Image (cartoon, rainbow, N blue to C red; front, side):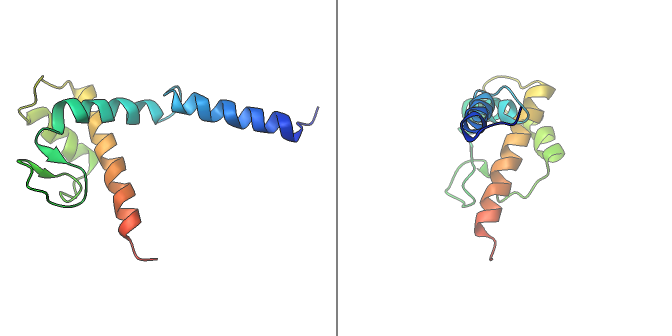
Length: 108
């Protein structure tokens, strides 16, 4: 049976709610990556694309790939020692934020 406009809207709302809750794809990584960043990295680093005098510098300006960010995250003097999974999760988050900021700054 073909879907009506109403049932398509309901399906779209359900899909957005599913992703926003962190139940699909990368949404969970972004949410948990942000939490890890805020708890363990934000005390020394920023994600603004501008140097603002933070002790560890801005991670967007570092222009590092996910593997390098994760490797450094394992060595940083964080409040709690990060696991490899946590380091990879926060690295994907930092990379996603950096990519978004770079796209916003890119000339059209």
